[in-house]
Structures are given as structure tokens and as C-alpha cells.
Length: 553
Image (cartoon, rainbow, N blue to C red; front, side, top):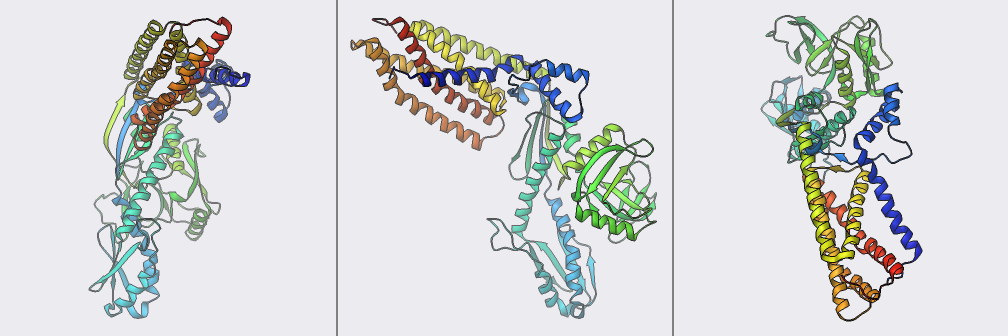
């Protein structure tokens, strides 16, 4: 047992050295962070003398992975948003109208003329001039139903069709509403994540909370208002035919029309057709640019389907105005001078450079499918984060010092060996966190402090077993061998059950709970490794050199 082969010794010391080297950049956090930011900036936009100096502050051949600091340590913004999923029902119903209209026109002989009626946002009402053909109309519209492809909606269709007098009514089925809710939340999560990632923030926490809420925590951002400005805009871009202009905000736009204000012309309103020709969902790219007069603008490009619709419409309506609408405000309404077959164009308006850049970010990330209502918002300043870091440092130092003193006084030379292994253990934790890009939070620091205590538990079990074996008049080598052998099962049992708990906390927890689970889980792995392998190797090396006749633990 105490004859450790050379290859095992090389592997053990190699893993320790690798972990400590990976952890080393955290001792020079500011310098390495500046180096990493400079590398990203150079890759994105070219090298400048300032960026070159920041990059040179840390050698490229050394590891540059850092433990990311969480919101409670770095400061930043916290938002809890509720997704208004009901908004999507109206868009979904409105999107059904062209299909329903075409299906009923094919049954014109039976149903006569059709006209869409005013209704609740989540239902579509169509009046038939020949109610006696209602059965054929219902059958035709039911043919548009599609099956629901979710586990809970198996066997259900997406719409329900019924008759009420001379009106045909189409609504979304309950299974489709549930599926739509889930899709809306998932899409909102992805788009919020894209928008936050676009501005290069580090390790944001963006996750679903409850049925229709999203938790957003972004370390390093200036304020909650800044974060809301980035993600709170729906950024729904649409292109509408222009019916007319007015200065009367109370003017009725007419059936199937809408009245939207002009963004840069106070008191001016546009009457537009309600159904857009093209939507922002068909955009593939948007970049900040400058127009021919040198004013900030945004270039955009459609996908093939959007380009085809955009090209066809502009070819058929040369000389007519065409409104570009963002979140129910008309950005501009240029006249179509010629057909635009390429599917690309430019959005101009009263933008600043920053506004055109922000708009391009929002359009690239995509439109939120529904409005976000912010229920909770907090700005955590960097001073609070600095206080948390300082408090965490004090807690770690006090715990560490107390454990080191206790082990040295209780077990003498063996305690010193355990202390060296404990220092290596903490270094390995930070090395692993740097390797996986983990985020350290205040609960994560608590996990490290707990790990320090648990690492000592394993050494205490081993040393106490060695003491018992020494009382049986066994030699030092045999006592150490049996001590490790008999303590192994207790060490593994205790750590495996705790590791299972850490895994469950990580899978079911969120935010701070996950931060605690990550450091606890990694700490258990490193504690077992240092207690079973590192301390034993150090003791074996000591025995080989000193060859004592007796030992005292």
C-alpha cells in the first residue's frame, strides 16, 4: 500500500501542479481581466496602442482563465420580469385570419360573403351572409387545425371552431395555449440571453422562475435602468403600407387599420394597414451605419422569404410611402422610388450613434414575442460587492487559520502535512472553477469554507485510525497502511452522500444555491483526492527519507 509506483507519483504531483497553475491567474485578477478584455476587443475591432498594452500585461503562454465573480461580489443589476403571454394569443389569432379567409372563399357558394367582426383579442369572429352554410364553413376551417406536438397535448389540435348564430368563432385550444405559453417563455429567455450577450457581460444569470417569470442577474452592468433599456424593449420591427397622415390623435383609423405616432415628428400620426407586409422575424442581420448624409442609421437584411415579399411589394407600389414601425412608433415612412429586390435596406431617423448601435443590437437579437413587465428591480453597487468580497476573505482566512492551528497542535508533523494538502486543496478548487468558467458567489464562498472543514474531517479520520493501529504495537509503516485502508470506507461514504446532495442542489436550485452547490461539489472531489492521495504520498516520501523506528501522531 505504501509502495507508490513512480507513475502514480508523477500523476498526483502533475495534477496538483496543473490545478495550481490554472488557479494562478486569480492572484492577478485585474491584470488578467484587462488582458482578456483586450484580446476580445482586438479580435472584434482591431488593435490600438492602449489595447496592445493591456494585452501585454499578461503573457499569452500562461493560462488566463478566471473565476467569474457573481452579482453579489461584483455588483450589477437584478430584474424579475413577467412575460405577458396573453399578448401572443392575439398575434396568433390575427395570423390565422388570412388562412381562414382563403378557406371560406373556397366555400363561397355555400357561405356567401364573409366579413371579419370586432372581437376579443384571443378569438376570431367571422360573419357569414348565408348562415345556412355554417356547417360547411366550420368543416372547412377545422381542416386548418394542426396537431399539438407536446407530451401534454398529444391528440389535441391547435384551434377550436364553433358556430354562434351567423358568426363563425375560432379560438385557440387549451392545449395550444399551454404550448404557446411554454414557447413564449423559452423564446423570451433566448432573446434576453442574446441581447445581454451582445454587450459582452460576464456570466449573466438568466433563467425561468415559475410559470411566466424570468430572473435576470447581470454582474458588472451599471444599473437596473441600463439593463431594462437593453432588454425591456420588445423591438418588434414591422413594415406597413401607409393609408394616410393626420395630426389628430383621436381620429378613427378605420377597419383593419391602426394609428401610430411618428417617432421624430411630434404631433404627426400615420394611418397604416394593420397587417404588416414584412416583420422583423424575417431579418437576418442589422448593423449600425451612416446614411448618405452622414447621419447614424441601421442597415438591415431579410432572409429569402422576407426578401421575396419585400421585393414583390416594393415592385408593385413604386411611388407609395412605406412605413417602418418599431414598437408601434413610425421610425420613418419613405416613398418607394424603385423596386428593392435584394432584401436589404436602411433605417434612418433622428438617431444618435449610440441609439443606432442599440437598435442594431435589439434587431439582431430578435423581437421579444411578448411584453415584459418588471416586478422587481435592484441595482447592486460595486461597493457592496467589495464589502462582500472583504467579508468573504475574512471568513476564509479565519476558518483557514483556525483549522491550520488546530491540525498542527493536534497531530504535530502529520497535522503540518494535512495543512499543506489543505492549501493545495483550495488551490485545486480555484483551478477547477477557472477551468470550467464557474461563477463565484457569496454562497460559493460559504461552500469553500465548508469544504475546508470537510477536508480536515477526512484527515482526522485517517490520523485517528493510525493512532489506534500504533497502540497495537505495529510498526510505523504498517500502522499508516492500515490507517488509510480502514478510514477509506468512512471517507467515501461521507463524501459520496454529500456529493449527491450537491448534485441535487445544483439540478433543482437556482442562482446562489447553484453557486453553493458548484463549490461544494468541486470541493468534495478535491478533498477526497488530497486526503487519500496527496497526504499519503507526502507521508510515504517522508518515511522513505527518515525511516523512523517510531512515530507519534
